[in-house]
Length: 293
Ligand SMILES: Nc1ncnc2c1ncn2[C@@H]1O[C@H](COP(=O)(O)OP(=O)(O)OP(=O)(O)O)[C@@H](O)[C@H]1O
Image (cartoon, rainbow, N blue to C red; front, side):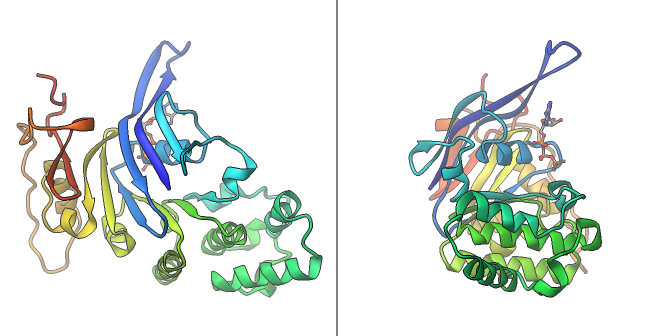
């Protein structure tokens, strides 16, 4: 299980590192086996920073991230079980190497003992899982493949490792509608096989598709989290309502979100500044400055 406890990330900024940006402030949540949790928030809310910290690519400033009770660190044993797939598949591939080199590297690092014929079969099976035809993929350079094909290639690579948790950061944003549904259905199937997924997105409609729990991130802190159905049908935080109101719905009139004026949960919030308004449904103070006074 993945567990984040009061995780904060402060980036040093400015010409000589004199300034700072708190990208993530005191975030706590868990992702269990076979659970899909969606992390939703607008641009700059800290989603990718959280994803990178979970993958050990960016150090945390304070708080802790553990995987099955052990602090995460960029190690082979961790990446054997936890992998990330990111928004822009083109940036993940070195343009001078053929795309199937990603599979060769996985074999060299993790499975040197597997005989070539068996390995070829495993690659074929993982490509079939993501509905890619090996003949159309293997032997090609990244620029000869589409964004959707590269994205699915990355998922296939993660599947070869038989991972337990996938950090999926905006993985469908570059895909056309039909490929997007294919990838989401694939994730649903993998979830059924016990894969945990942290599904990072700014697209609320995609968040609801798979996730049983939703975390709404606002300016680096959790505004609201709970069962997806509950959060979407009865959002308590004005920011969540604002986000939901921003989703265009066919044949439904535009509804203005309530302004964020005062904190509904001021003085009531418990651990981590979140109040449990109903079982498993947590809401933060809605004042920009928090519940300090
Ligand atoms: N390496 C960095 N150095 C300084 N500030 C950073 C760095 N990376 C991110 N930030 C800042 O941290 C905040 C959160 O950024 P992050 O990329 O995590 O947000 P996001 O929710 O993933 O946004 P998007 O949806 O646009 O990708 C932003 O204010 C961003 O400018």
